[in-house]
Amino acid sequence: MVYSTDPDFKFDTDTPSVAETLPPERQELRIWLDRKHRGGKTATLVRGFVGSDADLTALARLLKTRCGVGGSAKEGEIIIQGDHRDRIVEILAKSGYKCKKAGG
Image (cartoon, rainbow, N blue to C red):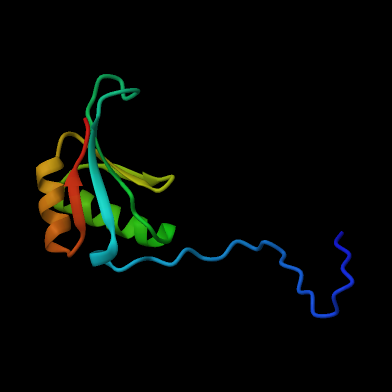
């Protein structure tokens, strides 16, 4: 409960707002190779996406289709099965995203 003596006080209920997806040219994505916690298999991670979960899922679907492999999108990152860093950088660059390989 909030009390205020200010007659113009507006209480903010902290309702979560829908994340606004930045246009591709303003996104800065990082491409990682991960071998940990995957049962010895490699996975390519795409991190740094700013936007809604629906747009993240759509981008993941595009990458999975173009690479011809499985994967998922969760917790703000895209996981693609296998080492497809070069191919993903090429696909994202053609789509207008700023991206670069990092770590791994």
